Length: 237
Figure 1 (spheres, rainbow, N blue to C red):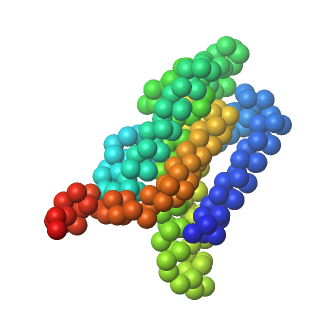
Figure 2: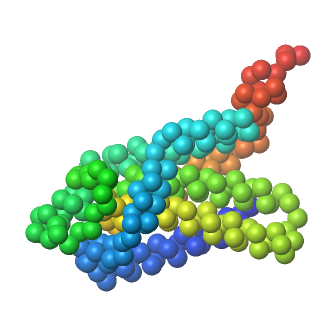
């Protein structure tokens, strides 16, 4: 499991380094305009809808689905998403950093900012990006689950190729979600950088806690909550 997840985690660290270099070599405004330099009608539509995948209804459905598989995993998923949201909420209100629209208005350069029709622009509480945190939390949990799955199966060369492809996809999807926030001028790269760290760190901390306490070996953790063999529904002997 550790070897498989290392693919995802190492790629994420490389991504952070690239983002850090970009932030160190460009001003916030320069970098935002550079990342927003290419807009098309098709991309406007795609990112306007793709960014909504980080909103709660989808994750509530995913959490309920996990309850039918392993209740403990659903608990970890729910705790990770909730904790990430709380951390983001607190930091936003401590930092009080303006969103790109407000920032460029203050610079007198609002005309340089490409905006997408139909998107309601937020003006405050930019840092960190909550959508980015949600995206990365969800897909980090997914990477951990698939790592566990592949650790239980024989690793043929075809399966090896498949797992590299799957892990690349699991990292590409939250990156797209994160970039959607920049493309729509709802966040700066700095916001997404911090949001991605929160989104990966929180579920890893919960998984470490679960494993260190041995909860993942307990019956209640591995049973379906709603299935016929649910822990609290089993027949008493």
